[in-house]
Image 1 (cartoon, rainbow, N blue to C red):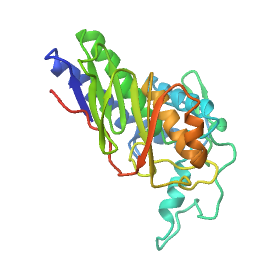
Image 2: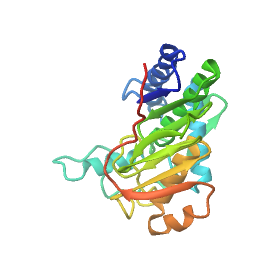
Image 3: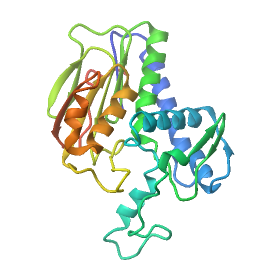
Image 4: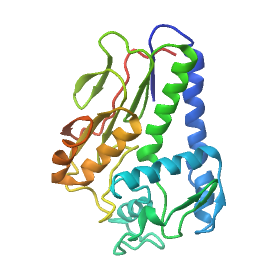
Length: 264
């Protein structure tokens, strides 16, 4: 995570906003003990959830809907199947020959604060969760400080407030771009917060050595577009050309953007 603040306004308070958001995300997604694990243990029964998990799931389902299922948060089981391949033992309940469930994100039920996930599915929220948190933290910090701010969580970058002269310098894909507002996201098969799988096949995209970076009016949309383009494979560039965004494709260097000029 990186935080850059224009000027010297209230950097300690800004840091508290971001670290608090990341701590809340950890409490939700911690394996075995987090709030999301409790939902999975319910095996399809509706479970009351807190406001942050509710919002994260709603954002993920909206992204799945907007991408026609390409940005699907229910790829957790597919990731386990891939991890099991080549090992000495199979993973109980996830044989490597089992195809991914056809329903995917459409079978996840979120009504108010009650969430139900079928027992055959595992939610993975990283594709949009870090984008949403970066975006929300940037907006909160800018509102409180009346200054410009950039928040980068993994490969999801969000800005808010006044932009410094020349824009925010953000190294990504072997180059430094000048971000003049909105959000940026990179999708690849290897990024820890956006490791992309094709929901239809449960496999890596057709071009697993490719990283797609998108700049859009907000970070969630940038992440959704980047993931969708990667899943679409050879059709991705042509599809992106029809979207309201800036984008480019680089070799996948398994790195993430870094916000320079960090002040704590």
